[in-house]
Length: 174
Image (cartoon, rainbow, N blue to C red; front, side):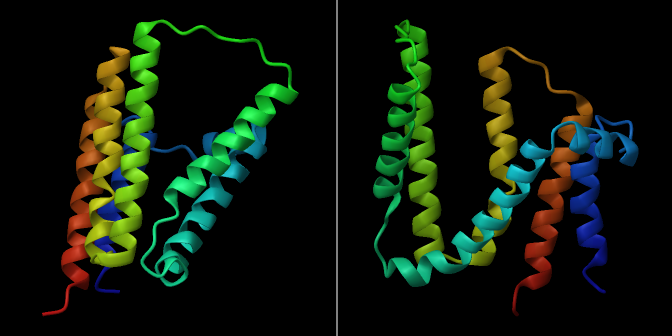
């Protein structure tokens, strides 16, 4: 029970961002889930699968990284879907190619770094630091899309980061 205030700070930050500073309306959340259960079901299942992956990756990999195999497998599936589905060829411009290559490099580096961190790193520190990555991602996305992030977003993101640091401090062994 001593960790409850830290969880409150973390959860409060998530709710501040999701509620855009106006609070969270549970009936609105329910309406969103009912209107698109597949999306929310996939999000829930991916969070469970990601947790399972993180728990077993270090033991199963035995020091090897299977990230390139994963990316090759996903690429083969997506190209197969494109070819079978009769997709129309797209000719991207220079900016689209730069964004594509930059995104691919960032995703590959992120997965690679995460895998190395899971296999050889301090899991508690890695988990705590991983809360800051979505904030950084939102910043870069807002920059690329020329979008404004609200003060509710930034204050909620700060609460999430502070909560993760406090959780990490609370779980450290002295």
